[in-house]
Length: 255
Image (cartoon, rainbow, N blue to C red):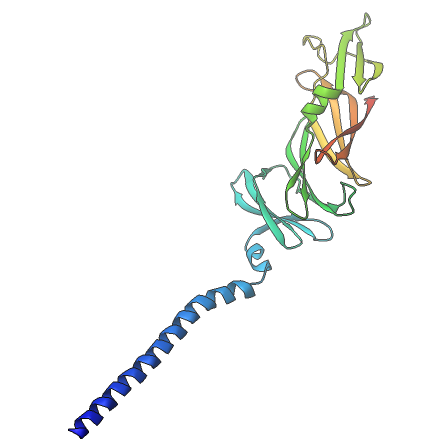
């Protein structure tokens, strides 16, 4: 009888030990399943994601890079902007037929001592047409800083009037930011087309100069535009509204 009890005790002890080992094994397996993927993400190089994308532009110092993530045969429709290893997607459209690559810069435009990413993209070109758009992105939070559109600048700061002189030339009056200028254009490029003020938008060219945004915005006459004067616009940063707005407008007749 005592022998049976000892055998039963040994069987029970073996079951407990086996169960404990099995539980430890299960815990170990579960821990491996949880920890392993986390370790893979942590060790994954930051460059690996962008290395799979198509690089379409970078600043000279390579602090700013632009990648295509959605494109058709006619246009890139979505991009990834990388600033010093931090990335964000934007729905910027870039023509595949413009022949001009995006221009990227890393410079301080706001005057706070910190660089912003600046991207200038050609959006259209043709006979008498040359259009660009500009994007400025905060390098800390990757938010885009608004740049006042040329349409708003024209509506708020520019007035013009066109009339014909007796000799067939055109008399053009321009009022920009309260400064009035008058000049004559040598001939009427569209005698059969009635136009009493200048048109804008055929040529919109952004550049950077001395940490400032510059805009060349010629005014034109006629359906097939003839450019008669150039509006050279300098932007300034409005800290209160976190926006780049017009600062100065210089008007020069086209000779």
